[in-house]
Length: 183
Image (cartoon, rainbow, N blue to C red; front, side, top):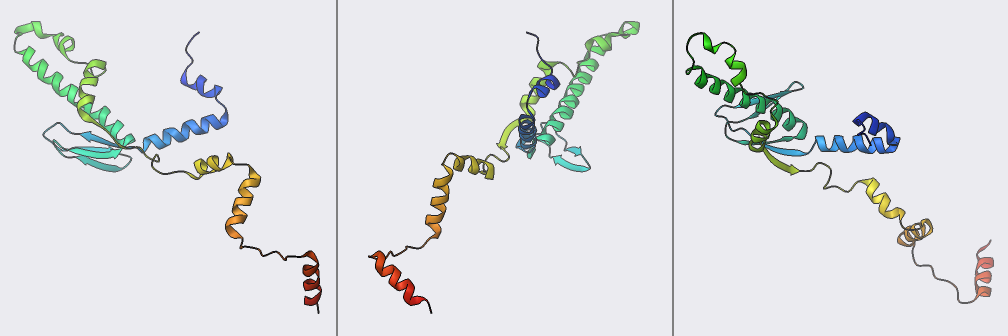
């Protein structure tokens, strides 16, 4: 069976499942992630008009969406720096017209998965806190309560609010008390 695209898989899901899926994506975007700057210079992360600065050779805790942005751009920068150093070393070996076209062959590619993985392992220090996972939502509490039959929930609520009721010993006494109270 052929693999379905993400859009095709989403269209198969019911509307409530889509809502759950998007809610989980939103929750994960706010996880707190520790990132590391292995360079000897501060690295500013500019995102949506805000700036986070990862100090040289230090860690910083940021939301996941900022961490993903940082990983992409810092990984590219580190690969390009390594590539430039490699090209400079190799360039010294060539003399005259032989260098033409060799730079493209020698230069490292930023889309190389093994090379990206090497740098991402250094930059990504891990999840510090999963957003929203330490609080119990009202929906989760409602699900827990929904397993108890409705009548028992009502009785439990009444029992906590009600005072002890004293019943008369004899039903005739109750009627006589009721008649005596009327003016």
